[in-house]
Length: 493
Image (cartoon, rainbow, N blue to C red):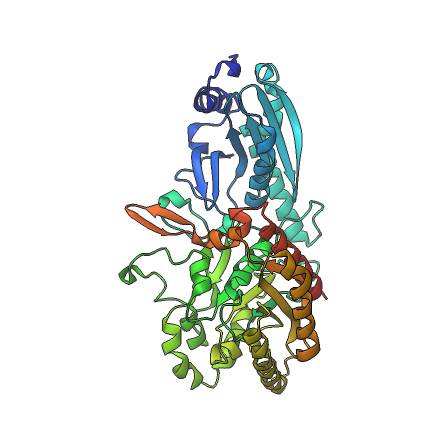
């Protein structure tokens, strides 16, 4: 059956008349394989399409998610929407995207982190070129392609041979999420697989390469939480598997990652399973059980939440001989699950700060470079020295200080040109600490991204976003991208 999409008068008709009633049936997708108006964190999709039935809508590692469709009004230029579609495909790990306004019809294909236009025609030509379109994004073709890919992966897993297909890190978002509209998140660790060994060939897996970074300064208000959540998001957007551990009883990072979606303490969903429980037991509450998927970033990031009860438990934990070492062992248990762990710390010379620095491989010291923050650097250096003495007793290498991160920097031109260089020089000359090349400026977008909210029933609850999800083109996003690149270069060896 032919259809003329140019007769659609607005975006609603492009969606209903063209996409729903003509295109999806013509491509072989029955109603139970696609969903309209889908929300995934900060991403809002017109259509999300699967190769097989997916009712109710759930997204996991192995979900046969194949196509994102974005429909625009006939008078809208598609060019400004291409970048956003490419971001959706990359972040959601979807192989194909379709962008149309009825008059213009474009198909994009993703390979790893690159997305390319692979088909384009006028809306009037869609019926005529339907065989070509089906060959790319038809339902049956997608099923066959996914089946072939699954068999290839199984064969390679059994034979322990490298895959000729470019490797893409599995997405925590695809592992853990149910759609926001369902009001719940389900967690699955299907992507955490044990090494496969062939009966005819012994294959020794590589040693775990997970890097653990503590973010610490004993002075508060220097941008520590902002650094943790957005640096983690920057790594996640770069394909890394990331874990955040909040060791601050103020739980600012727990809040900033969107895990405190309740308005009353009676509805507290964190109090019964958080970092307190993880640190209190050697045998129970492993990270896999305590960590929760946080939707402040797409793909999701696993977060071990903190709680206000952490403060009251400090003396009890301090009395336990093993308390300083528990986190080391529990991180070792998930060393194959993550590439990078980032630990947020309290602004104090406390037990929790010591636990973080004992467990970490590296340290970042955020600072606004103001006098009180500078004076606190001597305390930081003293704590690092004490911790390294403790680490040496247990055969752990010294904590590597990656440097001081200049954060909350004023954007005033005079400050940047004259005051900032002098303050950086003071850190290096007076305190013997290197200042990282990356700078994090105090900008409006960076402040607003943590203040986002969402409506659940009659309540408005916090729904913070990373700077990359809130405003991916902002200067702040670029600054955290540069920071991630710099840190990645320092921890690679």
